[in-house]
Image 1 (cartoon, one colour):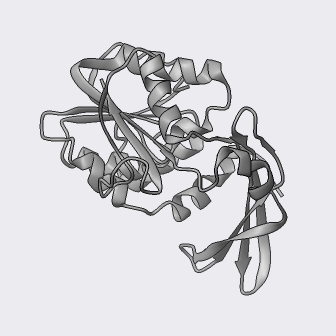
Image 2 (tube, helix red, strand yellow; image 1 turned 45 degrees about the vertical axis):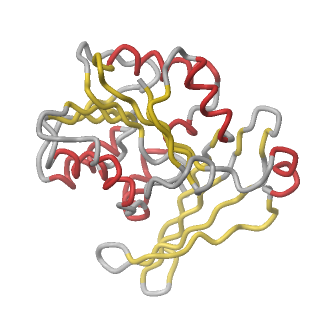
Length: 248
């Protein structure tokens, strides 16, 4: 069993195959667009936007994620290993994104403040930034009772390159309802010919926001809302499973 966060790059990559958000972000990109992707992971969005944008710079704190991103793209690409709460690249971008709920991985107020300062330092005049989080299924007064589970929650299974089977679970034993932070543990079990050959346990945090809170957070950091949606099909804000907000 391992606990190093970098170790999950292969499993993260295999389990992160959605394209709905890629098509959404692509609608804000043309041949002259300079894009900054914060928390680019293994390059799922980066690779797609590079095909249509002038330039895309992906930033992630995990060397293993970035190594896999470069391998996936078949070329070095433009990736920077760094902390999205304090990095300074010395250039500005027309579009700044943090796909796949990156904002929710920032547990503390200081980290959130830092992310908005990074956006402010890198957003070009006339440019926009887009953040997304999931919309909580439970109301605030229901989370403490409704979210935790004592048993593992199945998360599906898939077949890895080479034929191994990856089974996914998560534990939901702890949350901080006052600070609105979930502390799930992601569990990956890898089987070969029916035998368990690897188990990876990845404790994470997910800070959750309600629709009005996300708007207030962005405006409270001095930005102006451009548009907002409830999902990547541009559902009305607050009515879909995601909270997606564009701001300048």
